[in-house]
Length: 203
Image (cartoon, rainbow, N blue to C red; front, side):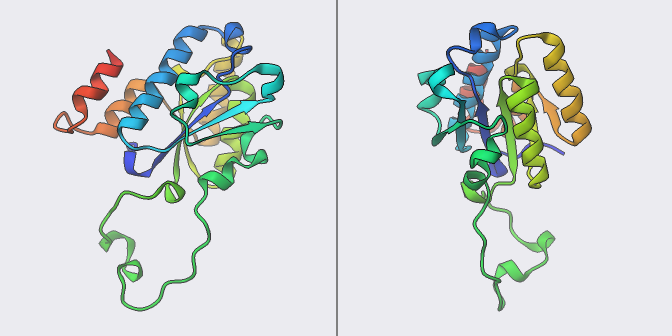
C-alpha cells in the first residue's frame, strides 16, 4: 500500500515556539515539517495545523501557519476532541440512486482526486510524539481514517518517549514513514511534472 496524494491530508501538530527548543533534535524535526508542508502545497494536498494552549506555548512558526488552511487552537491533547475531525471528515451525503457512476461497483468507478473533505488518508506529524501527536493519531484511527505518521518530523523532549510513541502507533495500525517516503510516494514517478520541485525541497 502506497500513499496517494489525491487522497491525502496533512496535519501538523503543535510545532510551537515555546515547545520546540525542548524537543530532542528539534531543529531537524521542524525542518522536516516545513519540507512536508511545502511538498503538500506543491501537490495540492490540504494542510491543517494545531496549537496546544497557544497562550502558554505560543504559535506555530509563520512558515507553517501560512501554508495551513486553518490552525486549530486546542486544550485537549488529542485534536479530534477539539474539532479536528470535523475539518477532515466528509459531510454526510444523501443516498445516490439511478444510473450514475456512484452506483457502479468501486472497482469499476474511475478514480478521481478527492476534495479535501473526502480524503480518508491523514499524514500526521508533530510534537510531542507521545502526547498530542499520539492521542490525535489514536482518535483519528478510531474515526476510521488511514493514519500515516512521519517519524522524522515528530519529536518529544526525550528520545525514549518519542520511540515509545512510534511503537504504540504501529501496534494501533498507523503506518510509520519518513519525509522522503512521503515525497516519493506522492510523486510515484520521475516523470511527474513536480518531480524536480519536490526533489529540490528534499535536497
